[in-house]
Length: 239
Image 1 (spheres, rainbow, N blue to C red):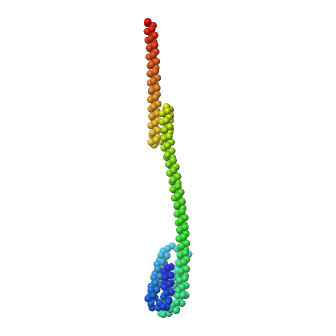
Image 2 (cartoon, rainbow, N blue to C red):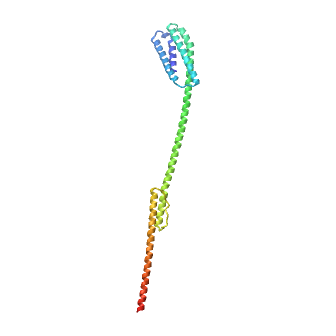
Image 3 (tube, rainbow, N blue to C red):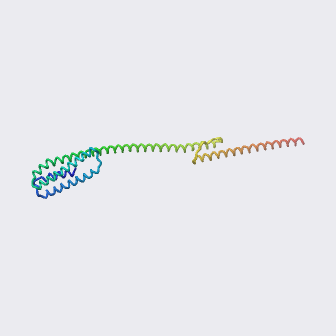
């Protein structure tokens, strides 16, 4: 579009009578060629773009209008070169401007269509970013809740067995040799609990053995006392 507008401006400047056979005239002709080259560069880009049916129709209308304008512009330049500036001005105001208007209308349609598509894509992208942000926020919150829950579970899995172990040790210290330590598992705390249970079993065996030994000693002492009493009786009888 910029190239087309630049070429249009150059054509109008060329028609100014005061520029005839001047350096400005040649400069504007160069601007005209540069504007058309810029327009052709833009056409190559759009030719590679996918177009829907309506856009393709407008693009075809633009190319037809541009071709008609190029033809009219060449005639305008020929008339100016022949010194028929008034005829050139009439042709430029008439056919040339009409072709330019058709080309610009088609370009404006395509430009507005692409702008609308870009806006729609931007809105869609923002919505997608918003959804992704919400998802990530929810995922982070879920991870934090899961971490907190796991922390509680791990803490309880450690503190509960330790509490049972402390209570067990206190009961044994208070003389309860029938205390029970209900802790199972494969970790170090479970191994410690098993060792404490074995220790209590060994302690019960030692107490039982000591008790049995004490009872045997008491029986032997009673027998000794009885023998002494019998001996004393026989001594008295002998006297």
